[in-house]
Image (cartoon, rainbow, N blue to C red; front, top):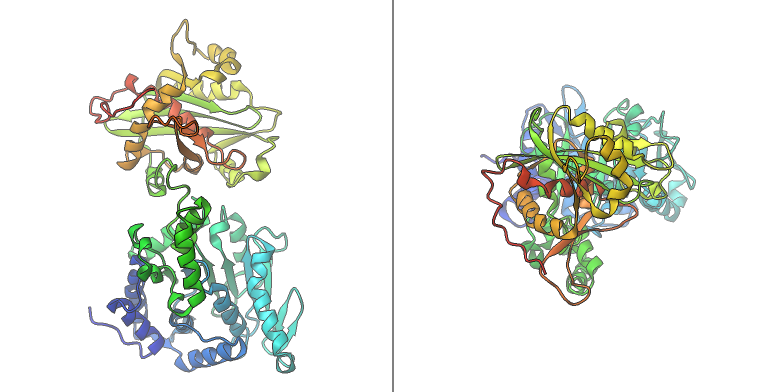
Amino acid sequence: MVRLMTKCKYIDDYIANIRDGTVKASKELIQAAYYIEKKLSPADVFIDVPKIEKAIELIERYFEMKLLPWELFVLALVHCYYKSADSIVFDEFYIMMGRGNGKNGFISGLAWYLTTHYHGVKEYNVDIIANSEDQAKTSFDDIYGMLDRTWDKSKKFFYKSKVEIRNLKTQSYIKFNTSNARTKDGKRSACLIFDERHEYENSKNIGVFSSGFGKRKHSRIFSITTNGYVRDGVLDEDLRLAEDVLSGRITNIGLCPLIYKMDTDEECDNPDLWEKANPSLPYFPELKKQMHKDFVKKEYDKQTELDFYTKRMNLPRSDREVQITEWENIEATSEPIPSLEGESCTAGIDYATLNDWAAANLHFVIGEMRYDINHAWICAHSNDLKRLKCPWRQWADEGLLTVVDEKEISPDLITEWIAKKAKSYVIKKLFLDNNKYALLKKSLRAAGFDDDIQKNLKCVRPNDIMKTIPVISSVFTNHLFVWGENPVLRWAAWNTKLERRGAKEGTDTGNFYYAKIESKSRKTDPWMALVHSMVGEDLLDTSESTFDDLPVIIC
């Protein structure tokens, strides 16, 4: 491929440095270099170099900073236009990089510049959005502080208060917002800045900000973030979209994804490669010092280890030693479930208390593949409801779970769901925790499930689950689970950890059991309903299975 020369040094030099290895780049950043070249190749594209130079001069002078190569690159891409339509090439920027690289400092200068007459758009209103007020105010306070320092001059051009900054010449404002603010409707934003998107559990609140968006000339969205611990939320949706854009599966949406991350765990052990996730590292000696300190401390402190990989390296994980599987394996379960009508299956039920959560699962084995149909119930009066780290209301609206507005979840609701499914599938046997059977016994018997007459019910004990865990691990690794589009089940699986049996007592047997990572905000009931149903796999057609001989030692 012949290299495109845009005649803008900030773009050409950065792309060249990515290509020749001067800038150590992730797989996604290398893809972005090719993608950006392609986007800028049409003859109709115009890069306003004088405006770029003026933006650099203003930001560096007023904010007393020297812009780094990646910042100059982004600033240049902001000023790429289609001449014929007088529109911008990139109307959305998605920037992910490690913590401490100056994302907020850069976005502060950029937001301020966009409100000035040098940018050249009147009423170019900037709204900064974050999950908390403190985070939303970070860049706003940077700009306010700069204006305070330069007020003798800046007061001729700006109005400032603790809640709004306004350019007097262009009548463009800068405001901060939280993602759950009630006053977000009706805004006339020309620029939306989403800060730390990894904290957002769903896009419902974010979407409301776009209701008045796009009416101003050259409207833009900037998302800046590190990776985080909320899985299957806004961040993972963003990354899936970025992947499809960079791979060419989606075109012409104006998104510019710049993802700075490590590509493998092994790279994280090489400080010379940390720049891949931290582009400011060569210029920030204090950041380099702190990262080396974290690198050493992570061997002694679990939270430092988790933050080092997730926040510094942008390789997300929960506890590496106990997570039931990698997130990629859980994410791979979202393939569509084929028609299974008339097929045999096992059923599983799990709940901790009926005034909290409950779940049921149907488990099918077709050749090597494992298919699961799962449903959950939430008690609307659960004490843990406000602590839940998931978009449960959205899931309820989508029919993935049922909210029960009673003091507790009636066992009849669970058994009615199973009885209804039994009309479409052949349920060989039902499995549930030995300690939970008494409360559901009457309802299950009425639905035709018992352990003495029909003998189509089994109470599950810890050893039963222990035997199933190696099979589950192998099914995950080989991507043989299919759950359809069920974020509730994926979330519950990610909330579950493996603990060694006897490890706390000093009598480690080498076997594992499942446990909750955090009991109040991260529920596991949908996952454990699946686990219980898998205890009965030997009742299903596993003639082609390779899992029969997986060893388990019971002590």
